[in-house]
Image (cartoon, rainbow, N blue to C red; front, top):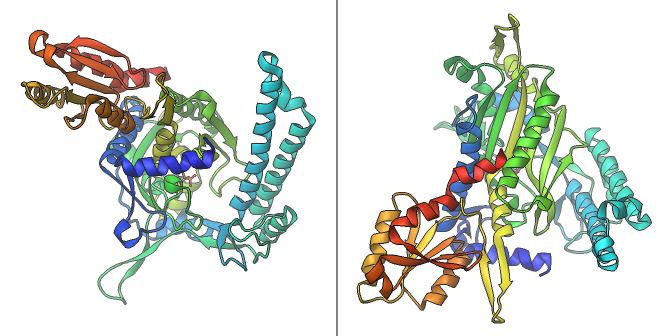
Length: 513
Ligand code: GAP
């Protein structure tokens, strides 16, 4: 299936099966704002819990926080967001459409990358088992040429943005002959910076109201609470503070479904460390976070690191963990070495000391910070799009199945009476009553059992449990596995352990070790 078609299927499946709805749909929706429906909210919660457990529960030196969305407005002056949290935008004069100038250039490079992938596929077919991908990528003249072109474009873009040379960003777009994706026109305005923060007001009357911002990242709530947590929790460096919560950005290029939203959720962890140790911790958290992703089994080939050419105003090293979304490799998580920038800025703007006294060194210092920051909605899209597959079956039919990692699936099991009579629904409902203390389970008695299996496959439910007439005699049921479609006869009393073995967080997180 072409990637575009696959992505359209993902969006419509998310709606049809109660995962994600367009916000305010009856009023034609609100651009780049989405609601999570009955299944989506469970999947999202399970992803959040999986992250929280790996960060907070599994580390005795990382604690949680839930800071407010509203913060004192000086926070954003200190953090640099008022002056520097902006995107370079460009308008097409003919179509009147507005774009992020850097995204136009990156999309151009992604097209060259697609050409490389095509060459690799062709060569793999030609050479068969003898094909060596790494050797091909480093020696094939056409592919090497493509890669050099990408590198030089991205280098120039990074340097121009770094120097705030917006005229050169426009020149690059013109030199590459990039056209408006809607109108095909190359009639561009100059590139201008546009601040992404949403403003609002606090207070009853217009003359006393204070201007506030909706937070564009959760991280600042952690920085301003650093000393409170360190002192009350008697934390010793290195230690971390983890937080999940909403963030808001007035994204101009808001497309690609829940990939880039105006209201979204982040899962961030700031790790406070001794100055000078930041590179060691940068490498450590790169590996740790990649292991977390891989533990979910979405395919090792679907991840890669992308080191930043252009560093944010606060960072001395930064990388993205990119994931292969249906529209190509894109940022899923950022890992940033933020130095002591934020704490120093808050010290300066608040006039309060934010220092740590190190008993071993008998000295005070401003800690450095290593940050891991992942978008919960983006992680949802990674998991959901990777899970949705269409399978050809032996009997020449196809089935749509959502192969969500069992630990994340909204419902762990569906309990199905074979028929709606003879006491089978009563037994099935009793199984629901017993299992619901441990797992989210659902009951379904409508339609033939084969159709119910298909419905649960498409919903992502890892197990179907069917109660039939033999159950009346032997207290056994048939348990069907979503991915293998294998069916087994098991005792009702064993169901809890069988399900637990596959959906338990411990079973999945242990893969990180
Ligand atoms: N505190 C650092 C920070 O906010 P970021 O790279 O701007 O860094 C971190 O954002 C993560 O938040 C990204 O890797 C992405 O997963 C997610 N994210 C950022 N903007 C988003 C948006 N508009 N919609 C959905 N997720 C977004």
